[in-house]
Amino acid sequence: MIWIHENFLKDNEIDELLNMNLKGFNHISNKNTKPLMSNTEMSYRICSIDIYKPIYEKLNLLHNLDLFEKHHHLNMQYKKFEEGDYYALHAENPKIYGDLVYILYLSNEIDGELIFPSREDAKKEWSKGFQEMCNQFNVTFVNKTRTILPKLNMCIVMKTGIAHLVRSCNNTRLNICGWPQFKGTE
Image (cartoon, rainbow, N blue to C red):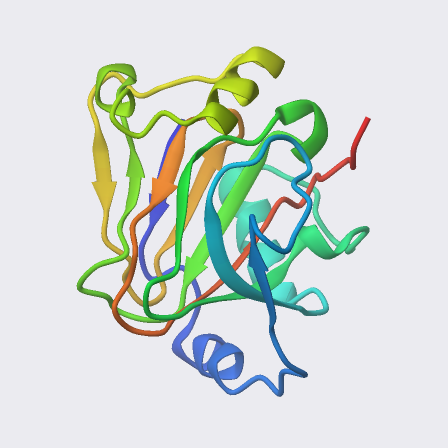
């Protein structure tokens, strides 16, 4: 399941996130980072942040959750995609990542789409690493490919286990994302 929430936070809360004093981003790629599951191609930057309460409050309200604390850096992180960054076809194992993931976009974009491919459309994106994921857990697919263009203050919430990818972007794209129920590796 995929939920799209537009105007997720108040304008002043988005401004706070955009003006947050960050201590630097670490470049994450399949060339410099050992994957938690399987090796799928990726390139982006992250900066761990403390819990921004309005995000959890809104997720709790809209999805009947009980989120209050940060237990792992993957629960909430500031993510930045720079020109050429992307994330190839992948899915997160619910046994490791918990039931859901959220992405709150902090910019309007013209590319760098989030794509949920159908099984048929995924075939052209299928990699050895993605096949390894499919062998590890039940990866699900949407019936019809769905493409979402990042938009300021839009929050995507999705069940883990669903196949998705992020196309390359031509600008800097900021978002806050996380797996609030991340359980760690088995």
